[in-house]
Each structure stands twice: as C-alpha cells, then as structure tokens.
Length: 360
Picture 1 (cartoon, rainbow, N blue to C red):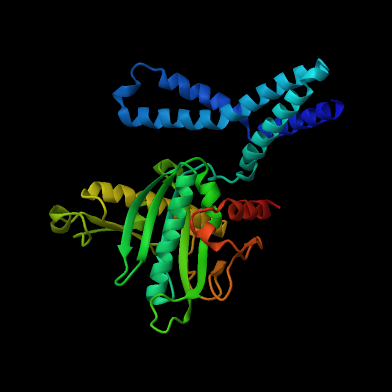
Picture 2: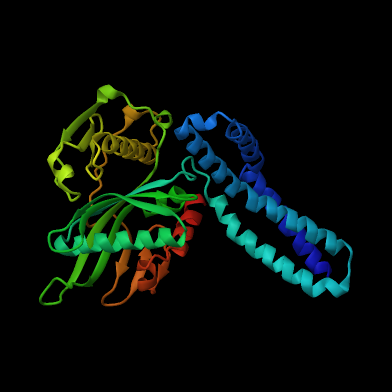
C-alpha cells in the first residue's frame, strides 16, 4: 500500500506541474469572461459574434475540464489511500492505473507550447517531381491526412482541389478544424518522398515520386495578422472548375497576390465571389503566419518568398514500398515497417516523435 501511496503522490505532483505549465488557471479566467458574454441576452442579435463566442467557450471547456476532473479524481484517491484500508488495495490499484493512463494521454498537450499550436489548420498538398506517379502520391497523402483527421474527430473541408489528367491530384487544400489541429500537423510541413513499383509504368519499374505538404495555422481574424491592402493584387476571373452552370459563367473565382513575397492564393470552389475572396484572404494570412514562423520574422516586411521545391534533397520523410517496406522521418529518426497503417492515417507515433524531438 505504501508504494501505491508514493506513486499516487508522484502522479498528483506531475499533474499539478502540468496544470501550471498549461496555464489552466488563466484559461479558467478567460472562460469566465467568455461565459459572461455568452449569457448576455442581447448576444444573438449579432449571430456571427455569438457563434464565435460559443465556439470559444466550448474550446476552453474541452481544454480545462479533463485536467480538473483528473485533479479531482486524484484527490479522492489520495483520501482513500490515507485511510490505509487494505481491503480496498486491489480497487485502489485499478483506480490509480486508470488515472495514470488518463494522464499519459493528456500530457501530450505539454508538447503544444508554440504560439499557434491551439489553432485550426490549413493543409495544402502539391504534386512534385514524378509526373502521374507524383499526382497519385499526392492523392495518397490527401487520403492519409483525411483519415488521420477522422480518427481525431476533426472536421475537414476541401477548400480547393485540382485533379490530375490521368490519375491523382495536382493539388488540394483542406481546412482542418479540431483540437490542436495545427500543433499536431505542423510537423507534416515539407516534402514527402515515395519509392514504389509504378502502377503507371508498363514495365512496372521502380519510381520515386515527391509531393509537398504545406501546413499553416488557420488565421480567421484579420486582427491576428493585419495585411496592407496596398500590398495585395486582387484579380477576379471566370471559374473553370466543376460546380454547375452559374459557376462556369460568372466571374466568381478570386486570385490574391501578396506583392512583397509573391505568394499567390486562388480560390474558385464557392459560387460567390465574396466567399471565395474571404477564403483566399484566410489562406493568405495563414501562409504568411507560417512563413513568419519559418523565417523568424517579426514583421511581414521582412519576409522572403518561399522557394522550397518538391524534389530531391528537400524531403522530410521517406515512404518505401519496394524493395522493402519502411517509413522514416528524417528529422526525428522515427522508423516503422508498417507503411500501410501509416498511409491509412495512423500518424500518432510519427507526430509524437517529431514533437518530442523538436522540444528537446
């Protein structure tokens, strides 16, 4: 029993330290202010603000409650242990084991300490060198991230997609909404390399393909990253994609160019020009926020345009299906031979290995 008491006290100490690092007290203060606004009877006169506040309330509660519940359950366990009732030892060991497992899951949040880690994410996938094989590879990655998001109970929406001529996709952009979406996906940013026997080659030769994945924190509010309108070039044009007659016969598509960096965002999925512009502006702000992080820039004017190509020498991870099976992350060194499971969306261990290596 004394060993169990010691373990429980150590767990309580670890939880208290985690609560401090995660600023749960500050989050509760923020939640209290949000709840006061939500309880305002006039709130729903401004539906957009009401939805934003209720969403914020839900997000804060989901971050606070699991930790407070764990603290409460540990207090109860410690009180029972203090009674030193040996007839309860088996039951209390089981309770401790459950609480320790819960802490093991929750403590992953300690890896999310960067400025945008709690944000939603914008994920863009671009086929690189490798022709049709690369376009097929880009679609495989798209499926992988959608599956991973589903496993996380995230909401995923396709913002834009350009299909390949023969197979796969040339590019696709996803909006990923969920708890710590950017924090978990940020390590996927970079070039991904695939080696396999090509299904598009009559001789069934080994083919190396590349695809570039961009992961950006979703910046919904203009106040989070202010843009100078004078530095934007906005073009509208006729949509050429699927979507019905009105899409194809109206100038609804929008292309926004950030002149200082040369970053271009083009959106044509929505029927409304205004909706396409709002989506394009969100993605542009997100791209610039990511670029600031990469280049350690304090000001947007310091930014240089991105130039990393999806080709040899730039990859962050390799996926080999032939002549052997292996996924290897070139930054953390994490390796697994279970390629099919990874491609089916099981990225937890890869992501955790990257995050743990990144904070050391």
